[in-house]
Length: 358
Image 1 (cartoon, one colour):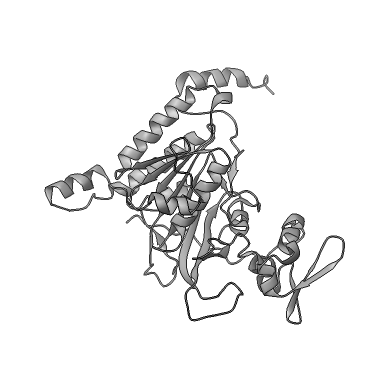
Image 2 (tube, rainbow, N blue to C red):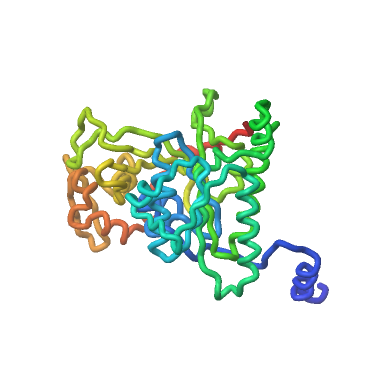
C-alpha cells in the first residue's frame, strides 16, 4: 500500500478552489416543538423534539387544514419561547396581528420580523443576504433564527408579475417550480452550519391518478425532494365535544397529517391532530391511536378498556376517553418509557412521495 492519504492537504485544496461549502456533519442541535407530541414524534423520532433548525420543513395541505395554525402559530410561539428570533414572510397577506397574538405569538419587533412579500426572487435575496451576514459572525456569537414562509404556493415569479402588469397572463413556462427548487436547495446546503431553519406552508390539489390517490403538493416535485421534512395535511371536521361525545355540530378541525418525508423518522405514517375552536390544539391528540395501532401497538384491548403494562410490570387500564385526557398522566408515563426497538409499530405499505411539476 502507498503512504497514508494527506487529508489536511486535500482540505486546503478544497478551501482554496471552491466557495459556498462547509466541512463535516451538521446534525440538528435545536428542535422546536410543534405543540403536539404525536406530530413531534412522527417528524423527528422523539416526542419532545419537532422541527429542526438547519433544515427545511414543509407543511402542505388544502385551505383550512390547519397548516398555518401549526406553522405560523404554534411553531412560531414555541420558537420564541426558546429565544429564537423569527422572520415571518407572509405571501398571502393573511396573517393578521390579532390572530397571531391569539395563538400566543409575540409580535413585538425584538421577537418577530414580519415581511409581506410576493416574489420568490425577493425571498431568495433576503435569505442570501442573511446567510452572508451570518457567515461573517463568529460561530459562538451567532443567534438561532427561524424563517417562516406562509406560503410557498402564493409566491410569484418576476415573469408572472410582468405579465399581470401588461394584462397578458400566459404563464411562466415552468419557471416557478425551478425557482422554488433552487430556493429550497440553497437553504438546505447553507443552513446546517448556521443554526438557521426554514419552515413553510404550501398548497395541495387532488390527484386524478387512480393508482396514486394522495393529494399532490403544488409547485413541483423538485423542492419536495430537496426538503428534509414534508407533511401533507387534510381538513377533517371535529364533531366531538370536550367529553369525547359525538355531535352534529362542528367543534373544530381534525388535521389529518401524513409524513410524506422525514430524515429522522419513518415516512408515510399518519396521524390526526385535534384543534378545537375553543381551546386550540390538543397536545396529546393522536397518541392513543399511535400506541394502540389496531391492536398491534403497546396498548392491548381489555374488555371495554385498554391496558398498558409499564416497565415494572404494573398494568394500567383506562377507557379511550381517559387516555385522550391523559388521565393520571398515563400518556406521559408511556412516552417516558417508550422504546421503539422493544415495542415496534408495524409499518404501513410504503408509497411514493407525491409531487408535480405543474
